[in-house]
Length: 422
Image (cartoon, rainbow, N blue to C red):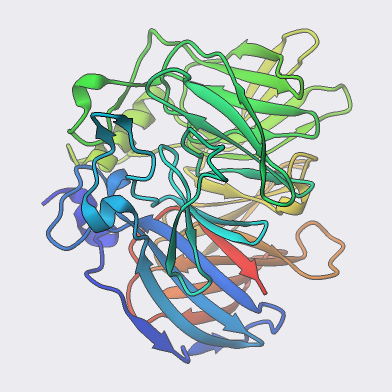
Protein backbone atom coordinates (compact mmCIF):
# COMPACT_ATOMS: atom_id res chain seq x y z
CA UNK A 1 0.00 0.00 0.00
CA UNK A 2 1.19 3.54 -0.75
CA UNK A 3 2.64 5.34 2.26
CA UNK A 4 0.16 8.20 1.86
CA UNK A 5 -2.69 5.77 2.59
CA UNK A 6 -1.17 4.47 5.83
CA UNK A 7 -0.64 5.57 9.41
CA UNK A 8 -1.42 9.18 10.25
CA UNK A 9 -2.17 9.89 6.57
CA UNK A 10 -4.68 7.05 6.22
CA UNK A 11 -8.13 8.23 5.10
CA UNK A 12 -11.31 7.59 7.08
CA UNK A 13 -13.98 5.48 5.32
CA UNK A 14 -17.17 7.47 5.92
CA UNK A 15 -18.96 10.56 7.15
CA UNK A 16 -20.19 10.67 10.74
CA UNK A 17 -21.81 13.06 13.22
CA UNK A 18 -21.34 13.31 16.97
CA UNK A 19 -22.88 15.66 19.53
CA UNK A 20 -21.91 16.97 22.97
CA UNK A 21 -18.21 16.25 22.70
CA UNK A 22 -16.25 15.75 25.93
CA UNK A 23 -14.01 18.67 26.92
CA UNK A 24 -10.96 18.60 29.16
CA UNK A 25 -10.15 21.99 30.62
CA UNK A 26 -12.31 25.00 29.89
CA UNK A 27 -13.27 26.31 26.47
CA UNK A 28 -13.36 30.12 26.37
CA UNK A 29 -17.00 31.18 25.97
CA UNK A 30 -15.91 33.74 23.40
CA UNK A 31 -15.00 30.89 21.05
CA UNK A 32 -18.46 30.59 19.56
CA UNK A 33 -18.29 29.50 15.95
CA UNK A 34 -16.89 26.70 13.81
CA UNK A 35 -13.41 25.31 13.31
CA UNK A 36 -13.08 23.70 9.87
CA UNK A 37 -10.04 21.74 8.63
CA UNK A 38 -9.63 20.53 5.04
CA UNK A 39 -7.47 17.73 3.70
CA UNK A 40 -7.26 14.84 1.21
CA UNK A 41 -9.39 11.77 1.95
CA UNK A 42 -9.89 9.44 -1.03
CA UNK A 43 -12.91 7.15 -1.14
CA UNK A 44 -12.43 3.64 0.30
CA UNK A 45 -10.45 1.45 -2.05
CA UNK A 46 -9.25 4.34 -4.23
CA UNK A 47 -5.55 5.14 -4.65
CA UNK A 48 -5.35 8.71 -6.01
CA UNK A 49 -1.66 8.38 -6.93
CA UNK A 50 -0.48 11.04 -4.48
CA UNK A 51 -1.32 12.39 -1.03
CA UNK A 52 -2.04 15.75 -2.64
CA UNK A 53 -4.73 14.40 -4.98
CA UNK A 54 -7.20 12.70 -2.63
CA UNK A 55 -10.80 13.95 -2.54
CA UNK A 56 -11.30 16.87 -0.19
CA UNK A 57 -12.89 16.23 3.20
CA UNK A 58 -13.65 18.94 5.75
CA UNK A 59 -13.72 18.09 9.44
CA UNK A 60 -15.78 20.53 11.50
CA UNK A 61 -16.22 21.23 15.20
CA UNK A 62 -19.00 23.54 16.42
CA UNK A 63 -18.22 25.45 19.63
CA UNK A 64 -20.74 27.57 21.51
CA UNK A 65 -20.30 29.40 24.82
CA UNK A 66 -17.91 26.91 26.40
CA UNK A 67 -19.42 23.74 24.89
CA UNK A 68 -18.40 21.55 21.96
CA UNK A 69 -21.80 20.99 20.33
CA UNK A 70 -20.85 18.77 17.43
CA UNK A 71 -18.28 17.17 15.19
CA UNK A 72 -18.96 16.18 11.61
CA UNK A 73 -16.91 15.34 8.55
CA UNK A 74 -18.06 15.73 4.96
CA UNK A 75 -16.51 15.14 1.57
CA UNK A 76 -16.63 18.18 -0.68
CA UNK A 77 -19.00 17.02 -3.38
CA UNK A 78 -17.16 18.23 -6.44
CA UNK A 79 -18.06 16.91 -9.89
CA UNK A 80 -14.93 14.77 -9.68
CA UNK A 81 -16.16 13.23 -6.43
CA UNK A 82 -19.76 12.67 -7.48
CA UNK A 83 -19.35 11.80 -11.18
CA UNK A 84 -15.62 11.15 -11.59
CA UNK A 85 -15.58 14.08 -14.02
CA UNK A 86 -12.23 14.42 -15.85
CA UNK A 87 -10.12 17.53 -15.31
CA UNK A 88 -8.92 17.53 -18.92
CA UNK A 89 -11.65 17.12 -21.54
CA UNK A 90 -11.92 17.47 -25.33
CA UNK A 91 -13.15 21.02 -24.66
CA UNK A 92 -10.20 21.92 -22.45
CA UNK A 93 -9.80 22.01 -18.68
CA UNK A 94 -12.85 21.63 -16.45
CA UNK A 95 -12.01 23.85 -13.47
CA UNK A 96 -14.88 22.35 -11.45
CA UNK A 97 -13.53 18.78 -11.73
CA UNK A 98 -11.08 19.02 -8.83
CA UNK A 99 -10.71 17.69 -5.30
CA UNK A 100 -11.15 20.99 -3.35
CA UNK A 101 -8.94 19.44 -0.67
CA UNK A 102 -6.46 22.07 0.53
CA UNK A 103 -8.01 24.83 2.62
CA UNK A 104 -11.28 26.45 3.66
CA UNK A 105 -11.83 30.20 3.99
CA UNK A 106 -14.66 32.62 4.75
CA UNK A 107 -15.14 35.89 2.86
CA UNK A 108 -18.14 38.15 2.23
CA UNK A 109 -20.61 35.57 3.56
CA UNK A 110 -19.24 32.64 1.56
CA UNK A 111 -17.44 29.58 2.94
CA UNK A 112 -15.11 28.29 0.22
CA UNK A 113 -13.23 24.99 -0.05
CA UNK A 114 -10.11 25.60 -2.13
CA UNK A 115 -7.54 23.82 -4.27
CA UNK A 116 -5.15 25.78 -6.45
CA UNK A 117 -5.83 24.20 -9.85
CA UNK A 118 -9.60 24.64 -9.85
CA UNK A 119 -12.60 26.71 -8.86
CA UNK A 120 -13.53 27.13 -5.20
CA UNK A 121 -16.53 25.16 -3.93
CA UNK A 122 -19.00 26.97 -1.73
CA UNK A 123 -20.02 25.16 1.47
CA UNK A 124 -22.79 25.67 4.02
CA UNK A 125 -22.05 26.23 7.73
CA UNK A 126 -23.16 22.60 8.25
CA UNK A 127 -20.68 21.40 5.57
CA UNK A 128 -23.14 20.77 2.80
CA UNK A 129 -21.77 21.45 -0.70
CA UNK A 130 -23.47 24.31 -2.54
CA UNK A 131 -21.35 23.99 -5.70
CA UNK A 132 -18.50 25.56 -7.66
CA UNK A 133 -18.14 29.34 -7.50
CA UNK A 134 -16.80 31.39 -10.43
CA UNK A 135 -18.00 34.78 -9.15
CA UNK A 136 -20.61 35.32 -11.82
CA UNK A 137 -18.49 33.84 -14.60
CA UNK A 138 -15.64 36.29 -14.04
CA UNK A 139 -13.13 33.74 -12.69
CA UNK A 140 -11.62 31.77 -15.57
CA UNK A 141 -8.54 30.37 -13.78
CA UNK A 142 -8.04 28.27 -10.68
CA UNK A 143 -7.94 29.97 -7.28
CA UNK A 144 -5.03 29.60 -4.91
CA UNK A 145 -5.72 27.82 -1.63
CA UNK A 146 -3.98 30.74 0.13
CA UNK A 147 -5.89 33.97 -0.57
CA UNK A 148 -5.00 37.00 1.56
CA UNK A 149 -7.59 39.35 3.06
CA UNK A 150 -6.39 42.93 3.50
CA UNK A 151 -8.77 45.74 4.47
CA UNK A 152 -11.73 43.50 3.66
CA UNK A 153 -10.60 42.73 0.10
CA UNK A 154 -9.47 39.25 -0.89
CA UNK A 155 -6.31 39.00 -3.01
CA UNK A 156 -5.57 35.74 -4.77
CA UNK A 157 -4.14 34.23 -7.95
CA UNK A 158 -4.48 31.34 -10.34
CA UNK A 159 -1.69 29.48 -12.09
CA UNK A 160 -1.96 27.17 -15.04
CA UNK A 161 -0.02 24.60 -17.04
CA UNK A 162 -0.82 26.55 -20.23
CA UNK A 163 -0.72 30.32 -20.78
CA UNK A 164 -1.59 32.47 -18.99
CA UNK A 165 0.71 30.85 -16.44
CA UNK A 166 -0.08 33.34 -13.66
CA UNK A 167 -3.09 35.63 -13.11
CA UNK A 168 -3.69 37.97 -10.17
CA UNK A 169 -7.27 38.50 -8.93
CA UNK A 170 -8.99 40.69 -6.33
CA UNK A 171 -12.41 40.43 -4.71
CA UNK A 172 -13.90 43.56 -3.16
CA UNK A 173 -15.46 43.65 0.30
CA UNK A 174 -18.79 42.46 -1.13
CA UNK A 175 -17.18 39.39 -2.68
CA UNK A 176 -17.32 40.63 -6.27
CA UNK A 177 -14.40 39.89 -8.59
CA UNK A 178 -13.27 43.39 -9.58
CA UNK A 179 -9.75 42.86 -10.93
CA UNK A 180 -7.91 40.19 -12.93
CA UNK A 181 -4.41 40.83 -14.26
CA UNK A 182 -1.98 38.55 -16.08
CA UNK A 183 1.57 38.40 -14.68
CA UNK A 184 4.37 37.36 -17.02
CA UNK A 185 6.45 34.35 -15.88
CA UNK A 186 8.63 32.11 -18.07
CA UNK A 187 6.68 28.89 -17.69
CA UNK A 188 4.27 26.67 -15.72
CA UNK A 189 5.53 26.53 -12.16
CA UNK A 190 3.75 25.12 -9.12
CA UNK A 191 3.04 28.33 -7.19
CA UNK A 192 1.31 27.33 -3.97
CA UNK A 193 1.43 30.55 -1.93
CA UNK A 194 2.22 34.26 -2.17
CA UNK A 195 2.23 37.34 0.06
CA UNK A 196 0.61 40.76 0.22
CA UNK A 197 1.79 43.99 1.87
CA UNK A 198 0.19 47.43 1.99
CA UNK A 199 1.52 48.39 -1.44
CA UNK A 200 2.80 45.17 -3.04
CA UNK A 201 2.06 41.60 -4.02
CA UNK A 202 4.99 39.18 -3.62
CA UNK A 203 5.32 36.29 -6.10
CA UNK A 204 7.25 33.01 -5.69
CA UNK A 205 8.53 31.96 -9.11
CA UNK A 206 10.48 28.87 -8.11
CA UNK A 207 11.99 25.80 -9.85
CA UNK A 208 9.21 23.22 -9.49
CA UNK A 209 7.63 22.98 -12.93
CA UNK A 210 4.88 21.10 -14.77
CA UNK A 211 6.00 17.90 -16.51
CA UNK A 212 3.61 16.51 -19.13
CA UNK A 213 5.27 13.08 -18.96
CA UNK A 214 4.13 12.73 -15.34
CA UNK A 215 0.45 13.35 -16.02
CA UNK A 216 -1.50 10.38 -14.68
CA UNK A 217 1.30 9.38 -12.34
CA UNK A 218 0.66 11.38 -9.18
CA UNK A 219 1.68 15.03 -9.05
CA UNK A 220 2.90 16.12 -12.53
CA UNK A 221 5.57 18.50 -11.25
CA UNK A 222 9.33 18.14 -10.81
CA UNK A 223 12.33 20.17 -9.74
CA UNK A 224 14.10 21.96 -12.63
CA UNK A 225 17.57 23.47 -12.10
CA UNK A 226 17.22 25.14 -15.50
CA UNK A 227 14.17 27.18 -14.49
CA UNK A 228 15.89 29.29 -11.83
CA UNK A 229 14.45 30.86 -8.68
CA UNK A 230 13.20 34.38 -8.15
CA UNK A 231 10.80 36.46 -6.09
CA UNK A 232 8.69 39.19 -7.63
CA UNK A 233 7.46 42.42 -6.04
CA UNK A 234 4.43 43.76 -7.93
CA UNK A 235 3.02 47.20 -7.20
CA UNK A 236 -0.69 47.94 -7.51
CA UNK A 237 -0.23 49.20 -11.08
CA UNK A 238 0.95 45.73 -12.09
CA UNK A 239 4.64 46.58 -12.53
CA UNK A 240 6.83 43.76 -11.16
CA UNK A 241 10.48 43.81 -10.15
CA UNK A 242 12.11 40.38 -9.97
CA UNK A 243 14.84 39.29 -7.57
CA UNK A 244 17.03 36.25 -8.20
CA UNK A 245 17.38 34.11 -5.06
CA UNK A 246 19.18 30.91 -4.13
CA UNK A 247 17.30 27.91 -5.60
CA UNK A 248 14.64 26.65 -3.20
CA UNK A 249 10.96 25.87 -2.91
CA UNK A 250 8.38 27.44 -0.59
CA UNK A 251 5.01 25.84 0.05
CA UNK A 252 3.95 28.34 2.72
CA UNK A 253 4.82 31.89 3.70
CA UNK A 254 4.28 33.64 6.99
CA UNK A 255 3.68 37.38 7.00
CA UNK A 256 5.23 40.05 4.79
CA UNK A 257 5.69 43.76 5.44
CA UNK A 258 7.40 46.91 4.25
CA UNK A 259 10.14 48.18 6.56
CA UNK A 260 11.12 51.78 7.32
CA UNK A 261 13.45 51.82 4.27
CA UNK A 262 10.65 50.70 1.95
CA UNK A 263 12.04 47.19 1.58
CA UNK A 264 9.74 44.17 1.47
CA UNK A 265 10.46 41.63 4.22
CA UNK A 266 9.07 38.13 3.69
CA UNK A 267 9.22 35.17 6.08
CA UNK A 268 8.53 31.65 4.85
CA UNK A 269 9.42 27.99 5.20
CA UNK A 270 12.25 27.21 2.77
CA UNK A 271 13.04 23.82 1.20
CA UNK A 272 16.42 23.13 -0.36
CA UNK A 273 16.40 20.79 -3.37
CA UNK A 274 17.28 17.77 -1.22
CA UNK A 275 14.55 18.63 1.29
CA UNK A 276 12.02 19.09 -1.51
CA UNK A 277 12.99 15.79 -3.14
CA UNK A 278 12.46 13.97 0.14
CA UNK A 279 9.04 15.46 0.84
CA UNK A 280 8.03 14.73 -2.77
CA UNK A 281 8.71 11.04 -2.08
CA UNK A 282 6.31 11.17 0.85
CA UNK A 283 3.68 13.00 -1.20
CA UNK A 284 3.88 10.52 -4.03
CA UNK A 285 4.52 7.41 -1.96
CA UNK A 286 7.32 6.44 -4.34
CA UNK A 287 10.02 5.66 -1.81
CA UNK A 288 10.79 5.56 1.87
CA UNK A 289 12.15 8.97 2.88
CA UNK A 290 15.47 9.47 4.61
CA UNK A 291 15.50 10.46 8.32
CA UNK A 292 15.69 14.10 7.15
CA UNK A 293 12.60 13.85 4.95
CA UNK A 294 10.80 17.15 4.62
CA UNK A 295 13.46 19.16 6.45
CA UNK A 296 12.40 22.78 5.94
CA UNK A 297 13.38 25.83 7.95
CA UNK A 298 12.13 29.32 8.67
CA UNK A 299 13.79 31.79 6.32
CA UNK A 300 13.67 35.52 5.59
CA UNK A 301 14.06 37.42 2.34
CA UNK A 302 14.51 41.22 2.33
CA UNK A 303 13.83 42.75 -1.09
CA UNK A 304 14.57 46.36 -2.04
CA UNK A 305 12.29 47.49 -4.92
CA UNK A 306 14.38 50.63 -5.43
CA UNK A 307 17.88 49.14 -5.71
CA UNK A 308 17.11 45.54 -6.62
CA UNK A 309 19.16 44.27 -3.69
CA UNK A 310 18.10 41.05 -1.95
CA UNK A 311 19.19 39.64 1.39
CA UNK A 312 18.54 36.05 2.50
CA UNK A 313 18.90 34.67 6.02
CA UNK A 314 17.92 31.51 7.85
CA UNK A 315 16.04 32.30 11.07
CA UNK A 316 16.10 28.86 12.71
CA UNK A 317 17.42 25.34 12.11
CA UNK A 318 14.32 23.61 13.43
CA UNK A 319 12.23 21.63 10.90
CA UNK A 320 8.82 23.35 10.72
CA UNK A 321 5.82 23.85 8.47
CA UNK A 322 2.42 25.60 8.30
CA UNK A 323 3.43 29.10 9.49
CA UNK A 324 0.54 31.18 10.86
CA UNK A 325 0.12 34.55 12.57
CA UNK A 326 -2.46 37.06 13.76
CA UNK A 327 -3.96 37.95 10.38
CA UNK A 328 -5.24 41.27 11.71
CA UNK A 329 -1.58 42.22 11.08
CA UNK A 330 -1.40 40.79 7.55
CA UNK A 331 0.79 42.85 5.26
CA UNK A 332 1.74 45.35 7.95
CA UNK A 333 4.20 43.40 9.97
CA UNK A 334 3.90 41.16 12.98
CA UNK A 335 6.23 40.12 15.74
CA UNK A 336 4.96 36.59 16.33
CA UNK A 337 4.85 33.65 13.98
CA UNK A 338 3.53 30.19 14.86
CA UNK A 339 4.54 26.92 13.20
CA UNK A 340 4.41 23.19 13.89
CA UNK A 341 6.93 20.38 14.04
CA UNK A 342 6.11 16.69 14.11
CA UNK A 343 4.82 16.85 17.69
CA UNK A 344 5.12 20.47 18.80
CA UNK A 345 3.76 23.96 18.32
CA UNK A 346 6.43 26.65 18.03
CA UNK A 347 6.02 30.38 18.66
CA UNK A 348 8.70 32.58 17.08
CA UNK A 349 9.55 36.13 18.08
CA UNK A 350 10.65 37.37 14.67
CA UNK A 351 11.71 40.81 15.94
CA UNK A 352 13.79 39.94 18.98
CA UNK A 353 14.65 36.35 18.08
CA UNK A 354 14.07 33.16 20.03
CA UNK A 355 11.10 30.86 20.28
CA UNK A 356 8.79 29.03 22.69
CA UNK A 357 7.91 25.39 22.12
CA UNK A 358 5.15 23.20 23.55
CA UNK A 359 4.57 19.46 22.91
CA UNK A 360 1.07 18.44 21.85
CA UNK A 361 1.18 14.67 22.40
CA UNK A 362 0.73 13.68 18.77
CA UNK A 363 1.21 14.85 15.21
CA UNK A 364 0.62 18.59 15.32
CA UNK A 365 -1.79 20.05 12.78
CA UNK A 366 -1.63 23.66 11.62
CA UNK A 367 -2.19 26.02 14.56
CA UNK A 368 -4.71 28.71 13.58
CA UNK A 369 -4.58 32.01 15.50
CA UNK A 370 -7.90 33.35 16.80
CA UNK A 371 -7.70 36.89 18.25
CA UNK A 372 -9.41 37.69 21.54
CA UNK A 373 -12.12 40.35 21.16
CA UNK A 374 -10.87 43.66 22.48
CA UNK A 375 -7.32 42.36 22.85
CA UNK A 376 -4.55 44.92 22.45
CA UNK A 377 -1.44 42.74 22.23
CA UNK A 378 -0.67 41.01 18.95
CA UNK A 379 -0.57 37.59 20.65
CA UNK A 380 -3.71 38.10 22.76
CA UNK A 381 -5.76 35.14 21.58
CA UNK A 382 -5.74 31.39 21.10
CA UNK A 383 -4.28 28.76 18.80
CA UNK A 384 -6.58 26.01 17.52
CA UNK A 385 -5.35 22.80 15.93
CA UNK A 386 -6.43 19.22 15.36
CA UNK A 387 -4.01 16.64 16.71
CA UNK A 388 -5.08 13.07 15.90
CA UNK A 389 -8.46 12.73 17.68
CA UNK A 390 -8.43 16.03 19.60
CA UNK A 391 -9.13 19.67 18.91
CA UNK A 392 -6.62 21.57 21.04
CA UNK A 393 -6.92 25.17 22.21
CA UNK A 394 -3.76 26.90 23.46
CA UNK A 395 -3.21 30.39 24.81
CA UNK A 396 -1.14 32.12 22.15
CA UNK A 397 0.79 34.17 24.69
CA UNK A 398 2.64 31.32 26.44
CA UNK A 399 1.33 28.22 24.57
CA UNK A 400 -0.25 26.60 27.61
CA UNK A 401 -3.17 24.31 26.85
CA UNK A 402 -6.57 25.78 27.70
CA UNK A 403 -8.85 22.99 26.53
CA UNK A 404 -8.92 19.71 24.63
CA UNK A 405 -12.03 18.51 22.79
CA UNK A 406 -12.18 14.76 22.30
CA UNK A 407 -13.30 13.93 18.77
CA UNK A 408 -15.16 10.70 17.96
CA UNK A 409 -12.45 9.53 15.56
CA UNK A 410 -8.89 10.09 14.41
CA UNK A 411 -8.65 12.90 11.87
CA UNK A 412 -6.10 12.12 9.14
CA UNK A 413 -3.19 14.52 8.79
CA UNK A 414 -4.38 17.22 6.43
CA UNK A 415 -3.63 20.71 5.29
CA UNK A 416 -5.28 23.96 6.35
CA UNK A 417 -8.02 25.05 8.71
CA UNK A 418 -9.88 28.17 9.68
CA UNK A 419 -11.96 29.52 12.53
CA UNK A 420 -15.27 31.06 11.46
CA UNK A 421 -16.76 33.00 14.33
CA UNK A 422 -20.53 33.54 14.63
